[in-house]
Image 1 (cartoon, rainbow, N blue to C red):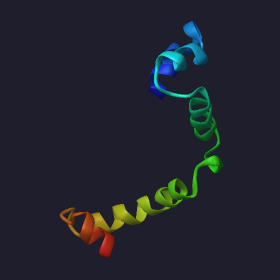
Image 2 (tube, rainbow, N blue to C red):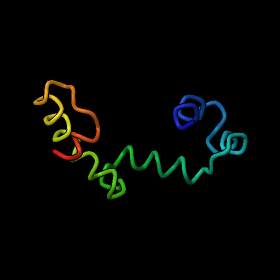
Image 3 (cartoon, rainbow, N blue to C red):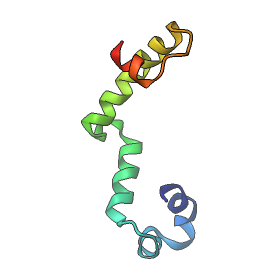
Image 4 (cartoon, rainbow, N blue to C red):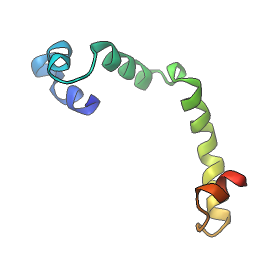
Length: 74
């Protein structure tokens, strides 16, 4: 939905689109602010971003055959 609003906001505006779609304008604006400033991301998203390189390392070191449980245990 965010991508749709981004594509059509110039023609229709954010609030009218949000009235039709099941999304609050504040949700769209918060998402846009987080995209512009990653420091506004929630703690969980920041931690997930920090873990991605470690997950990729474990997966590649194990011949890319480990599933989610084995990667988590490592």
